[in-house]
Image 1 (cartoon, one colour):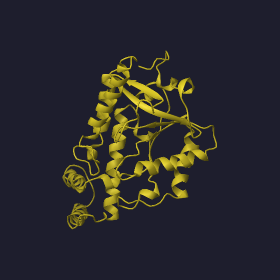
Image 2 (tube, one colour):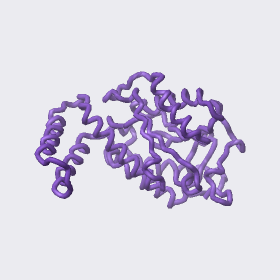
Image 3 (spheres, one colour):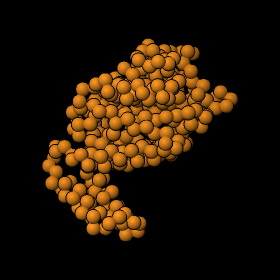
Length: 281
C-alpha cells in the first residue's frame, strides 16, 4: 500500500466485513471507561444519562456467558473499534481515513463464528464499489486457511462481483501472510521490501490493537500476526536468494489473475509499484 501511495496511485481500501466477533469484551470495557473519564474533560451531554448508558452496557457485558452472542449494541461498538483501528493503520501508510470503505457484508452479521450463506446482496455490495472505483488492480486476501472461513467467503464475493464487472477486467493480486504464505512455485510476483518498509508494515499491523498480543481467533500458530508476517516475508527473500536471485531484506509474494485466469511473466503490470524512474525499490 505504501508503495502505491508514494507513487501517486489512487488507492481505496475496502473492508468487506466488520470483524466484530474478533474483539474481546475487555476492549469494549476499556472504551467505556475512556468515555466515563473523558466526560470530566469535554462535554458529552447529560452526565447522569451518560452514566446510565455506560452502566447498562457494562452490566450486559458482565452477564454474558461463554458462547453468548453479543447484544446488537455491543456488536456495533466492536465494529467501530475495528473501523477506527483500520483507519489508523492506513493513515500510518500515508492514506487518509476517507480512503477506507466499510462494506459490512450481510453474510458476516450473525454475531457468531458461523456465518450466513453468501447471497446476491453480498455480491452486489462489492459490485457497486467496483463500478464506482473502476480499479486497474484489485488486491484481495488469498489466505484461505483462517480458522473461521471468512477470508474464503470474502474472496468468493469478490470473484462473483468481478465476473459481472462492466469495465475492463482488473488484475487480481492475491496476497497471504497471516495464516500461510505462497510457495515459491505458486507465486507469480515478488515485491521487495527494505528493512524500513517491513518495519512500516509492522507498525500498520500494530494499529490493529484489538488483534495484538492474544487475538480471539489466532489459529494453531502461536506467533502474533506481526511476527508471522515478518518471518514469512524474510523467509521468502532468503529462499529466493538461495536460488541465486537478487538478495533483498524481505519479499511479499502474490498470485496474479485476470478475468479468472492465472497470469505469469512479463504480462503482469508492476509499474504502479515503481518510482518515477520505473524502479521498484
